[in-house]
Length: 113
Length: 115
Image (cartoon, rainbow over all chains, first blue to last red; front, side, top):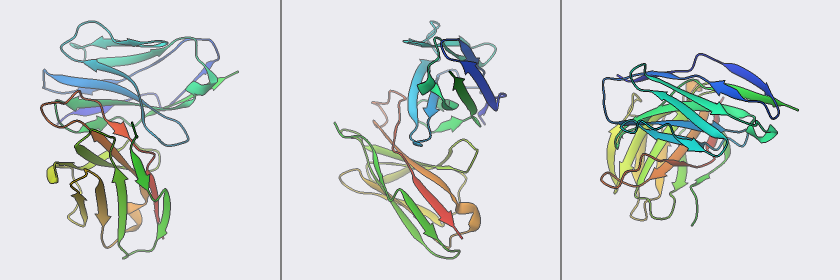
């Protein structure tokens, strides 16, 4: 069975600084997706970034980038130039192709002015 | 393009009652998944519907059931409510198998409180 582990329950960062959220996962699959979702107080899960396991290049979306280490089964999220609007719960998630999402327990990120 | 909408946004029930939650999928999506998110936890997969058929189920008892309609909207029904059913219930829509991009689009959830 696949598992996703987020070892940082809470993180904080000052506005304009950079922060990295950690995620590890366990799977015997070779073809899968990894995701970071953001959940603000509004509750809606918003996709931040997506990585396909067969792609060696790390995904990047504006200020958000990942460090995908397939052999180590590690998938960290780096947020550059943090903004107050980045304050939210962040969930790392795993999915086999056309299957369900498996979420970690989340990291609460607080961005301070 | 309309997003995923869920109703109701909040509701309160008592133990033993039944509840129905509703979800309209994003335009063009034929697959709907339901997740339960307990307070302080990550979402847990309940089940998925593809073209009106159940297409995968998580570790939830049979009193959790669902439907998908021809317009791809969906319902989650929970019978004999228990206190532990108190949670945020999230609906997500996506393209079906064969068109899968791995991306799910979530609604804002229905917050259920069982007293």
